[in-house]
View (cartoon, rainbow over the protein chains, first blue to last red):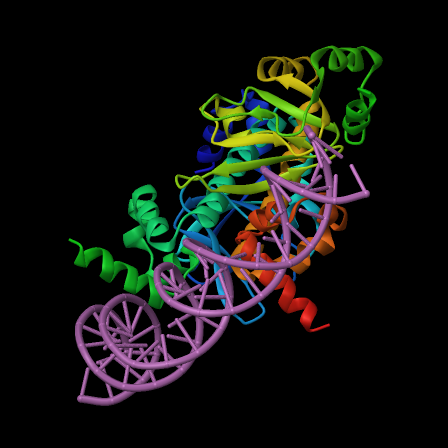
Amino acid sequence: MIDLILQNFRMHVALSEQEAALVTSAFQYRKVRKNQLLVEPPYPANTEHFIVSGCLRIYYLDSDGVAHNIAFGVEGWWLTDLQSFFTGNASKYHVEALEDSEVFIITKERWEDLLIQIPSLNIYFRKLYQNSIIAQNDRLLNMISTKADERYLRFIKKYPTLENRLPQYHIASYLGVTPVFLSKIKARLSSKH
Amino acid sequence: MIDLILQNFRMHVALSEQEAALVTSAFQYRKVRKNQLLVEPPYPANTEHFIVSGCLRIYYLDSDGVAHNIAFGVEGWWLTDLQSFFTGNASKYHVEALEDSEVFIITKERWEDLLIQIPSLNIYFRKLYQNSIIAQNDRLLNMISTKADERYLRFIKKYPTLENRLPQYHIASYLGVTPVFLSKIKARLSSKH
DNA sequence: CGGTCTCTTGACGGAGTTCAAAGCTAGTGG
DNA sequence: CCACTAGCTTTGAACTCCGTCAAGAGACCG
């Protein structure tokens, strides 16, 4: 099970058996039920999560009580409130299971220890963060420069599996529109065959 | 002059004199005039830029020919199309000088060499990217969950110097509205004393 | 069969855009 | 020192995208 993480690390850096053992002992396996929270404001997000199975979301709850989905995470993805995890400040985002899921958890202290004990992991995480920057860039650009109908079409193209796996209103929130308006977009699109 | 970069590195990691010399020889000093481009699609962004003086912007030109400012960079900031720089793919963003500026440039090859020769720089860049993720997170959240007038108020609070340094339409583009609408926002705000 | 949760549909309202015209400002050349 | 231009900002009217509210239609589950 933990092999999924090791495999992930080894896609970018080499690990000795001893180092692999260090990694194994640093993580903790945990099952989370649907609707359970792994990060909850204002408590700091002092854990990072590697998803083995299931599906999670990270979302922001604004001052009007409306949730804005920032990202979804599925098998093989990392997910936490990185802002809080890095700075130690109060978290701003909720991380919640959308399905019964399995994750490997590492606390910030153990994560920092691991980076000291296995310096090459700095390369892995530098690259992971590079990819995260790229993904966020795309998302921001998408929000800024395209309308909702276009964003919807790109979403179902990019994540065809999530389209069926998630309720419509979670996708609407991710796209930055109300569920009502997304429904109207779909109606409009399907009327133009 | 190059000391600005060394100083920056040394805020996060220790560098020997020998390593400092490696750094110095890896960068190239360059003056850029207002309106000059450092990155231009579709050529890959194979250089990263450390700004010593002046002001630059990175922006996306959409299919209608409208520019969307993604970020501004001033003294002490890094700026390039990271997506292209990391992947080697065609760049999507323009990087342009908004004022006569001075930058230190490093090519991707030399950057990768530097990370191999000075492994501790992986820590510096990991942290740099952590901060970049945090900043992008904030920006995305801002775009998603607040209206234009609020975004404007936050902008002038966060970057009071840029407010006077840049023409209004660049700020409007950064905020995700038209210059016309930003003008109306300002009129509305000042009418409420 | 009766809730609860999700999606749809329609009428109305607000935020932001587009287009066009006019005012303002700064540089430039005579 | 003035006149001209070119670029930036303001203002108003009509329009589009998207949100809010409210009511109804399915779907699922006890």
